[in-house]
Image 1 (spheres, rainbow over the protein chains, first blue to last red):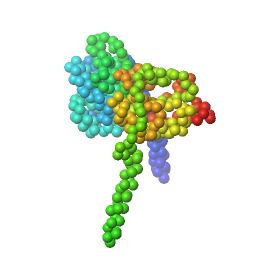
Image 2: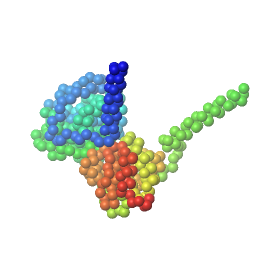
Image 3: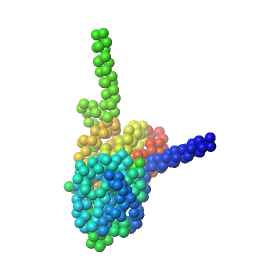
Image 4: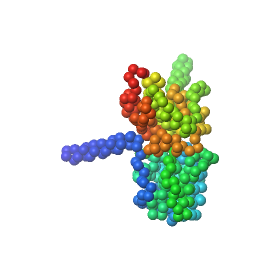
Length: 201
Length: 181
């Protein structure tokens, strides 16, 4: 009888916890992103084949770009070619691009198929329970974070100013990477990312 | 026996039609829906003008996009708010952040399906950041975003993400003059 009661109580606690978590999320507020200059702690996430990778293992010797991306978001998809080009252009310069998919409704198989369909060759990790999206305060897709070799955040925000590639006037992310590679301070450290809200768990 | 044979297909047809009709109505996929919603392009300066002009009524503004699921989900309730309060007590306009190519396609199609009557704009800019900062420096551009201004143009309520309708209505009730609806 005592055992049944304790199981019942434990279950009630779990349910109550889940309700509180959902209620907190229903507020719609995305956690605040870390400040520019903050150090991002190493993390481990699974890739689309469920193989774990740490940030450290994928980082470039001159820095790392994390981009939250999506399978279905038309804004994120408008950037597929630009993201792949960015990864190709900067790989040779020692900066690695890592895609992160934190959308709860897009599973690893969908992310894998999408990457193949759009020729995305940079590593893409799944963020189950959007823990890293929460840690980084990522709100939308696409949204980028540029870290130096010591994981210090140098730039956070959009890739460039326009969803339509023909209307690009300011390549904020590329400018940040070029400044860092030239040992110069990043002039514009933040630019608001515009896109689809990350569908959190 | 013959009658029974005839009744079965007829019954099946009636059943199919009755099942299909509400689905068509729900998704607005009638054969050729007459498009009535007018969506006007708006740039950052024009948006600033709309937000800062002198007004006699509170103003509700909803930023949304057809590709944004929570925007679509909350829209029927916003249409209801517009219908309930009416333009005499509350100004209300929507700003779509869809691509300009959707101004005569998906955006009016959705507004028609929603029977939305409030003025509708589409942000036509190469760079959305100045417009986002104009509305609210703390807004990060994620959708939907809903802002309520009092007659003085001060933000009295805002919500980023799917809005809590009861909370929004409560905020509107606080600023809408009684008897003006």
